[in-house]
Length: 233
Image (cartoon, rainbow, N blue to C red; front, side, top):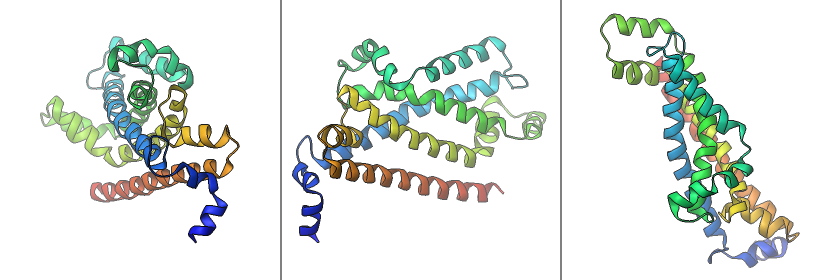
């Protein structure tokens, strides 16, 4: 089996597991970028998504000024292609992390690239909540915190897991493009060490590993959403 793999995927074997260009490094970089940018971008997207719902018409904090602010910021960043965003915010990245290249530097554009997508997803999830439940909670004297955490977020938790799953899968795709600023990862391995060198076996294996990540996230997200939906019912 080992001999067959070495003969079939010679360039995959030559890259090796260790070293800065090895497979372990690429896998680790992909996980690192996905986790931290999902955390930062997810928090920002959740805040903007909640803000869009609360300040919209019939929201508990209806305010056209703040709704337009949230809406325009989200629309602005969502309209910028990610590969252009990498260059557009390079000075900001330099100020925040001290460099414009590398895995850590990619976290800034990745976070800003994923947050508007997630904000819209959160907005849709929270908007689907039956407004009668919100009015019922208000009638019994629910506080602002109660409405946000015990009504909006709790009632939409299953749907929020689903949209988070979709966002994470999209984010993995963005990490591949982050290789343009030397971020590394499996996407960079597929392009730099596979496609550019015509080593198709490297491209195939890198793509397969990305698909495994996607499958794990999809299955895990679907399972968690199903559990939460069952509890809610």
